[in-house]
Every structure is written in structure tokens, then in C-alpha cells.
Amino acid sequence: MELNSFIASGKAVLGIELGSTRIKAVLIGKDHAPIASGDHTWENQLVNGVWTYSLKDVWAGVQDAFSNLKKDVFEKYGVKLTKLSAIGISAMMHGYLAFDKDGNQLAEFRTWRNTMTGEAAKELTELFNFNVPQRWSIAHLYQVMLNKEAHAKDISFLTTLAGYIHFMLTGVKALGVGEASGMFPIDSEKCDYDQKMIEAFDKKVSEAGYTWKIREILPCVLNAGEDAGCLTKEGALLLDPAGELEAGCPLCPPEGDAGTGMAATNAVAVRTGNVSAGTSVFAMIVLEKPLSKVYPEIDMVTTPTGKPVAMVHCNNCTSDINAWAGMLKGFSDAAGLNVSMGDIYTAIFTSALEGEKDAGGVVNMAMLSGEPVVGLDEGRPMVVRMPDAKMSFGNFARSIVMGAMTGLKVGMDILNNENVKVDSLLGHGGYFKTPVVGQKMLSAALKTPVSVMETAGEGGPWGMALLAAYRVNKKAGQTLEEYLNESVFAAAKAVTVEPDEEDAKGFDAYTARFLQAIPAEKAAAEFMK
Image (cartoon, rainbow, N blue to C red; front, side):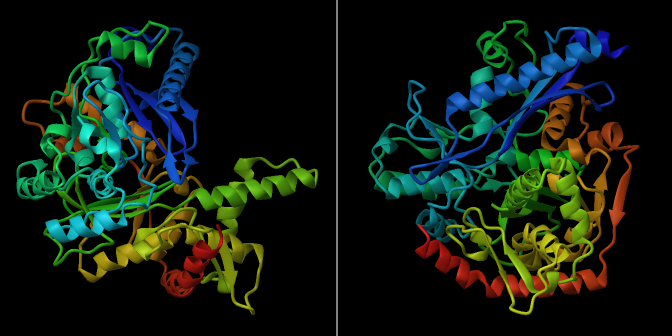
């Protein structure tokens, strides 16, 4: 069937992901390849000390991305996008979105980037004997309780950004198990919230004098492929205010950007892993067995089918590279040079290969925000260097490219010491756009081969579309792992880079200097206000 007829007949599948800097809608065809896309650029705001997005901006962005997708479809295929086979919604994980019984938002949306829940995270980690990171929804909720914020008594529904969008489109309060695992700890055997921990938390709720119970306000947990409702008429108008999109198509369980990254890299089976590197960076390793103890640097989440996953999450990755690229663009413009942003990024990444293996004593502290994995509550981006460092462009470029991955390396070294086995590690996201360079740096940092598929640039929105396709196309009894292997990645091509011993030694030396500079970073955060 020609693609225009395929689309017109409503057989295409849509994935939408709300990332930190971009909202993207990806439409896929019968072979699961992207056939059209639309996006919208946005940025979080620091309002009264809270990293947030307004819900008004959320909907403006979603509608703009979908509108741009419709334009792309019409320009490419000459047909209007009026109906779909399935939809999947994804967004950056964690955070805090609380509503009362009438659907009124009770507090600003508190995103994953905030590091204001240290007290709550510490107490819950001890209560559960399970690492609860600061960005998790339950940490935000408990901090609200500890702070005795007035709205806590009125909470009727607590969800994530993906869960909120899904609810508004379907009327169903649900999350995929992978996304749910960033709200509250999951029992992988039951693919549901851990009941003992639920009971322990409810005791805290009762002691604080609130009448609600935690299960009553959390979304229900669904496995990949399960029924998560259908697009309502109201939801169709929210997505497409022009009124051209038909209601009725099924939605799959909403997932977080971790789950979509796993799907997009076919890293949902045991001993597979992926690294998603953009505004933030996180590594997801599907475990054979539990870790020997609780590590505050390691989050335990799940795949979209509930398998336990060790996650190293860092708040900072490419934002500082973007800032330096913007500065270099300003320089080139001031010098009267016609240099594109694409050329600047390429120059930064390729020049990084020409720098000394340890960046010659130049260290970039790429800390735009706090970074719990290295003990930072606040960030102050800065470059430090040894007095005898050679401040060449190659060394500087290598320092900012390595600096984007240093926090991740600190966390992943823990898994290496736990002897966690990884048969395949795949990278995706903007960090890997320049061929080979990002792979070489990550491979050196983690001392393991890193592969990038031809589809790596598609990232989370495409992974979400794959989960939506699984919802409507899976055969009876077919697992997600089987579906991805047989229907999506059977002929996938990947480029693999092996770790270079000298690069690895250089990254170790760079990381040692980075850690030595952490006290200076803390001092900058304390005194620079």
C-alpha cells in the first residue's frame, strides 16, 4: 500500500515525546520506519527557585508539534492526517504534578531537574531500604508533606507529565510500569507498586493527618501492550484544535523517556543496556540479578515490561555544550564568518579527537543544575585548568565533550565494581549525532563497546511509537522483546566502537581531576547567588 493511502486509511501509528528542550511527534509506517514528524522547541523556566513548565506551555507545545506533523504529512504525501491506528505518549520522567478532586493544579509542575527533596529522599531510602532519588514523584510528595505545604491535604491525583497528557487524552489515570517505577518503587514480580512500601508510606500519611492513601492518588500500573484507553472527542480536540483528528483510536500505556530509550535501542532484554544522552544523560542496564546493596547513585527502575533495571541518571549532559556552541556562534558572527550551528557542533566534536587524552589538564564542570550522583545540590558551570594546561581548542573541545559524560562515568563505575554484565550497550540522542566521536568518548568512559544504530537519531518519540505499535499489532502471546526482535530490529544495522585503552586512561585521569574540583563547584554554588 502506498504511504498516502496507508496514512489516509488511518493505519499509521503516532508517538509523541515531551523532552526537556523539544516536543516531537513521529509517525511510523507498516515497517516501523518514521514517515513524518513535527516538533516544537521549548525550555524549562526557573521560577521562584523551581525548575518548571506551565501547563499552558505544555499544550501549546503539543499542539504545535502535532500541527507541524500534519503539515509534514500533507507536504510529503498530499493527504490530511485525520485518523490513527494507535498513539503513545511519553515525556521526561519523574517530577510532581498534583491535582485536586476537581482537576485543579495544586502546585507548579516540579520537574526532574529540581534538587529540593534531599530530606525526603534520604528518609524514604531508609524507610524502604531502597534508593529513592530526589527527582522521583514520591520524594516530591513526601517533601511536600514534610514542608507542611497547604495543598497536600487536597491531593486527589498525582502523576507525571506523560501520565497527565495521557489522562487528558483518554480520561484514564494510568502509567506504563517503566514510567510508574519513577514515581514509586515497583515489585517486578507483580508489575505493580511494592505493597510493603505502600503500607509503610501510608503509615507516614496517616501520621501526618491526611485522609488519602497513596494508591488512591497514584495512577494504576500497566504492562506494555495492555489497554490504556482510547482517544476521546475532548482529547482529539486537545491534540488537534483544528478538529480534523478523529477520536476512538487506542493508546498504549504512557512511558517515560527511559522506557522509550530502551524500546528505541532494543535494550529491553536481560544483559542489554542503553545510554540516552541529551539535556540529561542516563544509562539503563537490564539486570540478571539484584545489586548487592542499596546505592544512592543507582536508581532501580524497570523496562516497559517490568524487568529490573539499574539506572544511572545525571541531570547534566549536553546543555553546557550547547551554551559553548552558542558562544562560538556569537564569536563567528562578530568576526563576519558564515558558520552554521551545525558546523560549530561538528567542529567541537571532531576537534575533541585531536585534544590530549586527558584534555591536557583542562576540566569542564558541566553543572547547569544540581547533580546528586556527585553530591551537588546546585550547579555552577565552570571551566578549571591546571596552570600548565595547554588551552588549545582541541583540549577545550575534549574537556566539554568528556565533561558531558563524567557524572555518568562516576555512577557506572559502581556497576562495573558490582560485576554487572552487559552484552550490548547502545547509544542514542543528540550526543551521538556527530559520527563516532560520542561513541569513542562513552566507550572510553565506560570501558565497554558502544553501538549506535542507524535509527539512533530517532530517539524517544520513535521508541514511543514502537510501543504504541506493539499495543495494536502484537500477536497472541508475543512478548515485547520478541516483537522488537522479529518485527522492528531484525535487519537493523549498527556501528560499534570498541574502547581504546589510551582513551580510557585519559578519561580516568580527567575524571580524577573532575572529582578534585567538586569542592570548588560546591563553593561556587554557596557564594555565587
